[in-house]
Image 1: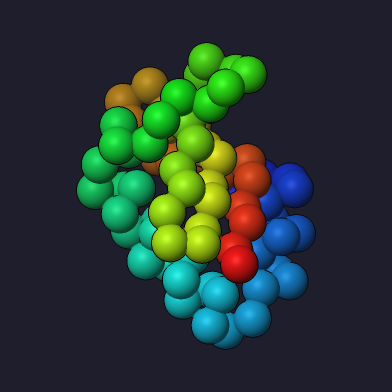
Image 2 (image 1 turned 90 degrees about the horizontal axis):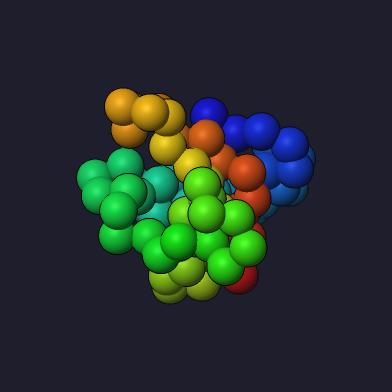
Length: 73
């Protein structure tokens, strides 16, 4: 699930960038704890790999990821 500003950022991605993001989201979904804690907000996780950065938090049961920021090089 994407919230603003991530939703706007995703709409601006090229097809190639969207494909990179999909792979990253699959990796995060498989192991959300692999992402490091965000530097300024303890509830957020920061995943940065292969030119894709995603800031997110997981719901209490970890079954839903809420994406708050997306950056794809």
